Image (cartoon, rainbow, N blue to C red; front, side, top):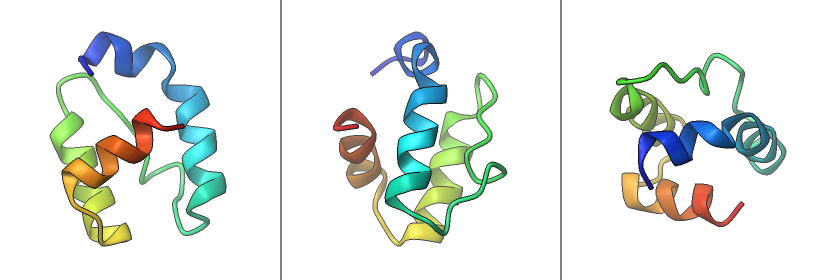
Length: 61
């Protein structure tokens, strides 16, 4: 998934992630272009998932 695809439906995905993982906040899901790795790092720490697991979760939403 490239950045354009990711950003295209990020608001929808963000809502679904918050439903699936109640511990996530808007701050955890802040996404600035060029900082995708930083966001994945925060999610990895908070959810205890690998980057690949997170990518699969987001793709499956």
